[in-house]
Length: 436
Image (cartoon, rainbow, N blue to C red; front, side):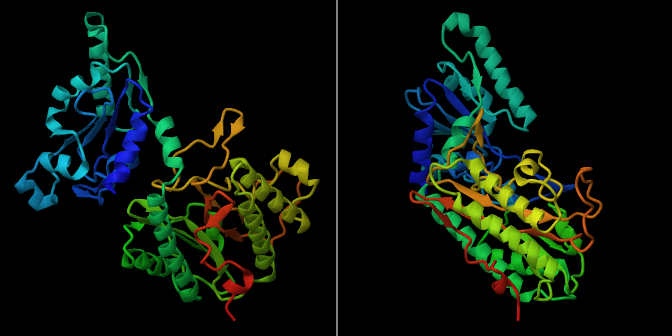
């Protein structure tokens, strides 16, 4: 993979001009007191380096005569490594990660100016680490003060996100291999969940079955807190308690994906706990399924990102009118967003190193154009939430629909000729998810 990271750094540096880019590793996250979560590197940092330790800084300085890629890392420390794990160390940072130069992180303030003083700007994303933000700004202000004496140095700070976002949006072949593996593992887990779900079991039991497969197949773990929502819980978009006992006659909505070598999958399926849809569940399920199929058909190079959502909204609204949940002319209902009490989220997001991956959806008034190599989710849903506040011109919701929540989600790759559904192996047709 080092050749892949090198290629990314070279691509980024070609866009920096005479600037210097600074990237900070993710901090350690505390679970409670002195117990920490498993470490997860900042996605941009990992994308450019593959380096997976905290307390590190990467500097890209394409204008520097000798050191275009510099790493500041924790030095080797046997006593600390016994407690918290092995460190790469300064020397190995050059050998293993391709740095032109490496320094102990404690020398950052001393060494960093030499990579900034001849740059015309600093590329840095002002993130959540306020102390490090202040450190970068301090160096910037110091160099501004001495600019008249040298006539060189950064006179602006520019965010790295727009550049890196556009790079990360198009997946390389190496990235696609990892994402296909993440999709395959999650596909197996979801398929198993459908087989073992039964009335009387608890949501957390199904969560355990899913996450067991994640780790068993080599994934890092869940890509996000797994949603296993039965009955009315399915109407809570980010329900994660997963502690309810499932009953016959209910639906189970599972939204779960895994992280594999930092790359993520994201799948949702909804199916009957007892094996058979009720009449109302089946009607709404088929509306959502048709909306998803037609939305996926919009995933074509040259189409807009918004076209996927627009198609899903139209099919869902038509279905709600047909069954009498909404009343009125479809175009007007869409224009006035009367569907939103039942479908309140967007249909898609980018997927990659982050579950809600980087990359813009809109350039001013112009929506993003779909291009080969992009991966997005397609996840329409309907949620007939109890006590939903409705517009005055809309009928009260018939109680027979209330409490039904349905979402169907797949991960879809834009190809040169159309699309590829990476998660197509998880059953979703009515006759597949019903058990006879």
